[in-house]
Length: 133
Ligand code: MN
Image 1 (cartoon, rainbow, N blue to C red):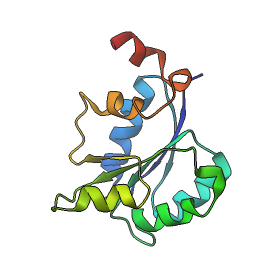
Image 2: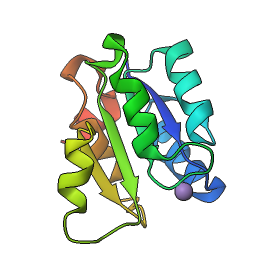
Image 3: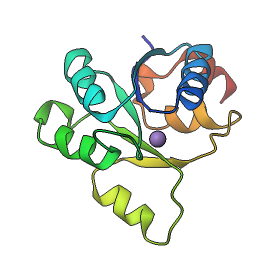
């Protein structure tokens, strides 16, 4: 079965692009448009992977990660940051916060799903992605 993926993103255009791409490859997606809603959705749905924007109102991506880190249930769930930041040291800051990886905006539709898929165990990877590989 393909992974269930939660997308936490306050920018509607980015959110719709990411949902569209993941669904096209066969993933089930769920969306939250701010960090607080994202934490709530994560606890309700227990997604297999979380894609999380860093710059959001109410709770930013780092605050979301801090909340998820408190819950042992999320230890096995990869959280991937999506960021417009590109300052020296950002990579270390993001990874040391607990994110398993990060992608820079703008999102590249050609490589996005393949990159996300690498963070999933083989049994949760979408069939369509496996055929491409
Ligand atoms: Mn944002």
